[in-house]
Image (cartoon, rainbow, N blue to C red; front, top):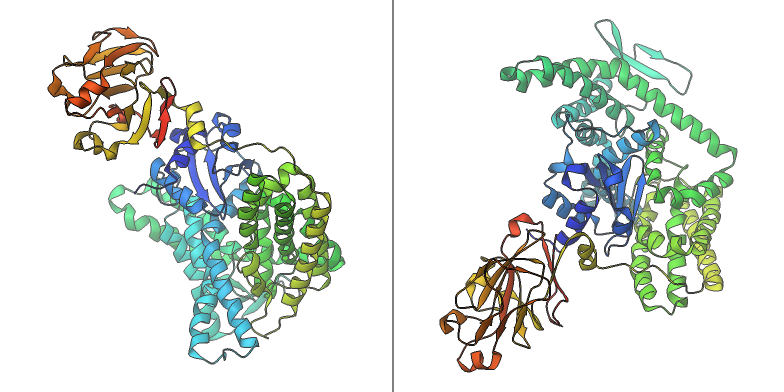
Length: 635
């Protein structure tokens, strides 16, 4: 199905080196994330100037095209046109770009978590609102409404290992049901073995933060489960699926195709399930605990300094997409403590950025800046700040610095208040309920967050109002203009009004059966060559002419409707079939008034008859055009 973003999608695909240069494409909240075979083939500067693209970032081993709130629609268009498949699963045979450890880690984290973020945030918001309603006695925790909604709000997070088993399997190229089965096993053993027996045989690392209970043995080896269990955990399932990807790859190579369908998953699970509980899971649990211990110790040294640091640098991390690297810290703390205090100060940053944008809106006299500020400001209220950063504050430098300073102060206040996030909730205005403890109905963290946000907003707004002055900004160019630079330009063969083809009564043209293009209502009786090329067709009746340009495009110009019946009367040919013509050369002259007097329309279709050789055509109707002005662009 056609999308209004098809044109933008085609521009993106062509300017990252074409389909053949794209290994995979995914998206997060605001940006397309592409893995390219050769990033040097990308036309980054042109993409940055394209209308509909906020900016382009190369970070974390990814080529990131920042779109904004409508990135899912652009992703769908890119995926549809590029034919990259569901979630863009990568082929084992595709070449991979070598990445450093940090870049590879961020690439894995974003690939595993990004598909789940929308639902994680949505269920978190439901949980937060339920806690708020319970606090104000709007809903009873014993009511059916509360319990049913809480089931999905808490259920998604509780069974997160199963969902991450799916996304990790897509990332590591494993059978997705194998990944989900491993996630289910983590929860099954936790919910059935532990809850049914409850008998602890021994405790590994007893007395430390890494204590792990042993409930049973597998061939004499201890089955270890952390005290907090595997519900809502993230690192164990990611590591388990990574190991499974190696095991499955081995079995896929050695098992005959006739029995591969069931033997590969059977053997993979038979090996990886015990391996997960005996080795991978415990190692992952130790890593999770270690992350929690280190981050908590750092935070406890000075919550204010930690808060100021996170607040000041959060937007900078967002610019490069590096904030993904902090996601495991948040989930490790959720797993260990039931809350996260380390990243909570980030919450002030998006509001500080938004306040700066609204201050610019009030101060600027530039109409385009006003328009951009309104859109970016509204987006920022709901936590999506890339349009504000790339479109307004970062190019002007000082407003961006002001937002970081204000966010740092707000973050320091949040740190001072010992704010705890109890869930991953919504962004921006929808995120406040993430700081409500649904178990104890404690809203103190939310109140401290509100205070930190309010102070950050006031500082950012006032400082920007005092310092902002309009500057000359770089203008975006339209998709049509970009297409002109990367496509094949076809000039107008006549002066007149440009119309849609579907406005014609002749079904052969209006249906597009003869090609795509436009119609022109001529103002003078001349047809000139729109390109350099060869006359491949000239009807004896002289009313229609076909040209093949030097670039390969085939153009049909048909003067009037049913004018073939005039048998050449009122038409004069200035060229003959087989002639080479230069752009601007007169090819046909005709008498407009005489043709009209004979009862015929002179509206003239101009169509490309070999559209199968092109990705798309860029047209603009509803205008008056002169000869030699750009009429069509072929991509």
